[in-house]
Structures are given as structure tokens and as C-alpha cells.
Length: 368
Image 1 (cartoon, helix red, strand yellow):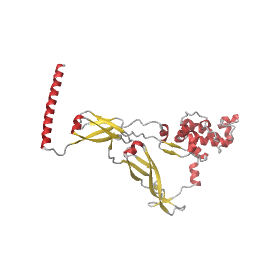
Image 2: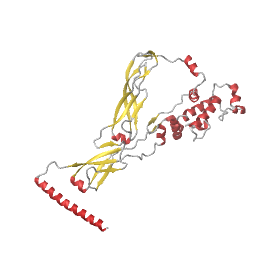
Image 3: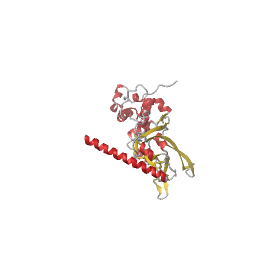
Image 4: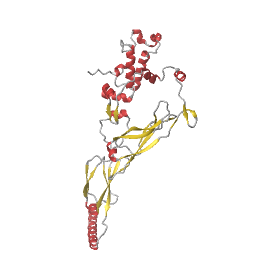
């Protein structure tokens, strides 16, 4: 039997359209009243509701349960990604995991550390927290090659080029990248071993060359240094038909002979998403002539965070670049004397008709 879902907005006594600031303020008001470390002898002075025999709107529920509910509610609603998933898929989607546009979101699990949520909002559990922590839990000292014992420095970043085909850029994809890195394999930090680690790259449709995918501190894990970042840099893989231009346009070159250049022709193009475009050319194809087909290029990449990606998951991509068609003229490699004679006669007659047409146009203009 499915358990009823908990309304996190009702727990914080806020409407669903509340801003993050309103949710934070509501949590602060409730946390001051319910924190187990508060001094209860001052309750009457700082919590007026206590004079009415109740601390919060959740009374008469026990204070420990109220404390647990408000921290779990704010842990979800105070996080933009968790809140977006909760608003769209409910508590069931949050706990079971959902497939998002940029990858799978694993099931959410509250760790039960209420004070961790409290300290994240109030920035500390005590005005003297820094001094107490330094005495009770002194920071570890790490050995460094240059300066002996001291603060760890960060290793240099590792950059790698990832080649993307235009088909992958057109539709978007997910790539699993295997990297080998040094890792500590024992508790005493005395032995290291090279192990394979898998990183997931979410390639959005329209990703441009030069886009950097940064995985923070995923490099070699030496005990005396902070791991460096692993950065993948997108690059276009050469294509046998198309070439990317102006970030989102595609260029295509088509071979024609002189007869086609003069009289027009029809041809078909197989697109990156496996469609066929029929292209009809009725103009005289002069040197430098191009045919532009709007919205048949690459999608224009929208750099969205995870929250925006969830909200626009079902929206169709409508912004595309153009397809630019250019033409290569194929000339005959050799002409016989007879072929040259025929070509001279043709162009002589062609030029005569062209001059007659120009004269007729001039007469018509003069009459007007």
C-alpha cells in the first residue's frame, strides 16, 4: 500500500508559489522554536505562540517529529533542483528517481542530520563555532613536496579533446568517458593504484566546438595534494557531407555541370536526422551563388541549468541555424575540335539572342 505523500509546503506553512526567501524565513521562524538546543526558560520571551500552549502550527504533534519534518521539508524546498522535481513529480518521483533531459536523477534520500540543515541556514550552531571546532577537531596537516607540512595545493588540471560527430551535435547524446587515475587503496594512505573511473558527459543538442565540460577534482588522488579537475573540450569531427559554420549553420557543396548551371535542376539532400530535402534550383547558378534553406542547420544550443531543463523538458527545439548550399562547377577535361566548334556556334547564337533580349527590354522601358 502506498503511503500518503507529505506536503512540504504545508509543513513550512507556505503556499506553493512562495519564493526561496519566503521559504527560508519560514524555516528560520520554525527552527528557532523547535531547535532541541534552545534554552526553554526563555521560550515565553522569544516564542509568543508558546504562551498559547503551542510552539508551531504543527502542534500538538511531538516536538521531535516537528523538528524532523521542517528540516526534511526545507532540505527539499531549499534546493532548486529538488524543489523542481518535487513540484513536477511529487514525493514519489523524488524518492524513486526520475529521468531528466540531461540524465538520470537518482532517488533522493534524506540523511537525517537535522542540525546540518539548521547550520546551513544559520551558518553556525554557535557564535563561537570556529574556535570550538579548531580546538575539538583541529585541521589535518598534509605533507607537501615543496614546503613540508602545510596546506595542500591543487594539482594541475587535465584537458582532453572529445570529437563529436555532427549527428551527435544535431540530436544530443550521452557519452561515458573512461579515465585512469591514481587512487589510495589502503586506510594508511601508503599504497596507490591506477584505477578506471567513468565520467558521464551530457551533450546538449547544438553543442558548439570549444565547449568545456569540467569535472571538479576528479583527477589523481594523491594524499598530499588536492585532485585537479578533468576538463573535456568539444571539437567537431570532420563530416563527409556537411561543414559547420557560424556556430549553428551547415554548409553543403553540390557538384553541377555547365548545362545545369544555365538551365536549372533538382536534387535531394540527406539530412543529419535522416530526412530527405528536395532542392529545386531555377536560377542561373553564377559564380558565388548560394542557396539558403532556413532552419535546416544545427539546433541553437541553450545552456540551461538542471532546474530550467526540467521545466522545459517537453518543449520542442524551435531555434535552428540555416543550411547553406554552395556549388562546384564541373568543367570537361578535354574537348575535341568538333566539340570546340559546336561550343563556339552555341555561344555565338546564345550571345545574339541575349543582345536581342536586352534591346527589347530597353525599348519597353523607353515606351513606359
